Image 1 (tube, helix red, strand yellow):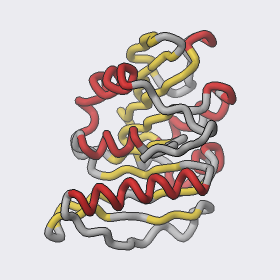
Image 2 (spheres, one colour):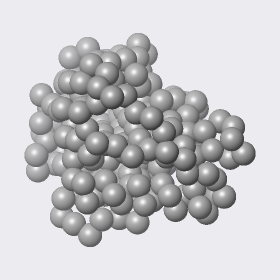
Image 3 (spheres, helix red, strand yellow):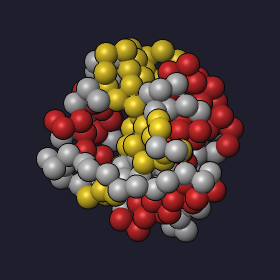
Length: 194
């Protein structure tokens, strides 16, 4: 399910396929952050490609609810259990989580936070917690200084997959090495490593 709103810009199918082809080697068993999550499509795709867990961050509560609905639908269709979990009390956001868990084994932890990206990125609770970050920020409000906060959330060797407005050029992110960047119409995809 996708939100009926101008507040999100779903990534095109070609761009999404290219992104996941580039990061596939990093996904198996990874802890992933889907920041600017929208409908959660990128994080859900990461789960389907072997990620261990995904944390979703979407600032608009109504849209974050769609992520929760999508996760519950996946759990129901796959005959998985949806169980409430405990989140860090230090978190400033609100969250609901889902453990996608078949027969009580190998569950994926999927909290959904209703919080803006900058507040989440500057919360020390999450420092060094992720192996992969998926960032598809709104192009009309693209702020490289906000994205520059994300490296501290990555583990050493971690990957940031960033979708950005190509007209602005490929952003330089302090603390990260650019591995590759490609253009898809007006969009760019860059993969960085810590």
